Length: 222
Image 1 (cartoon, rainbow, N blue to C red):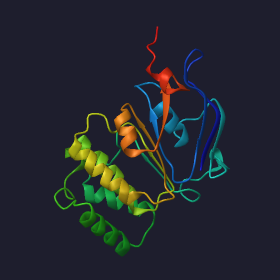
Image 2 (image 1 turned 90 degrees about the vertical axis):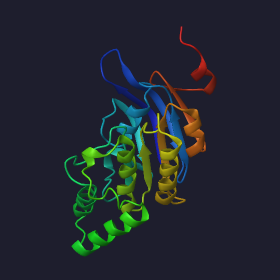
Image 3 (image 1 turned 180 degrees about the vertical axis):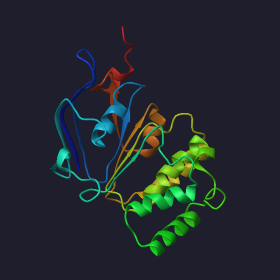
Image 4 (image 1 turned 120 degrees about the vertical axis):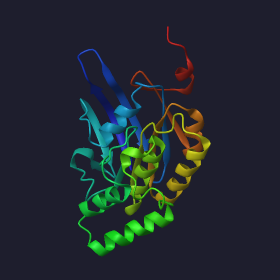
């Protein structure tokens, strides 16, 4: 599903955000990128999501070079950033409608899908609320819910888990179970190994832009 070979991302002459990254992730696998802030996790997700252009290296999704992949027509991918992006002055309902209208669906189908989501994810109390009035936890949940309108091949989640209460973690866990199929590949970034173990089967450790072993990850920098 995902193959990364000798990937580098350089922001300045001296600073590598990513240094010689090599990763293989199978279809349907759930993998956690574990590392502290500024370790390279988010940079890697942004490169895979095509928000950043790597300095050099190769990335393949389903055996296709990433630069040739169209996320609208070739692979159904979802990306949940640590800072969710919405039409802040529009309601939850209007934001969901906007996403579906972008897919040029018939008006009746749009309404049906929104109504189904409202019921399935218990959005009755907030569907007419402006997104700007939601808590960050509610925005994370809404970010995941709006991905439910399509079957996902590949799901990327940035570091949304820090400081979440057990209440919200359980909600997110439940939504992810509904979003994922046996073929959905999940790659998430977190600073917390317990989160990694809760949501994923495999952990990849990041430190100073490089992949390291678990032992190296816990070594103190001199």
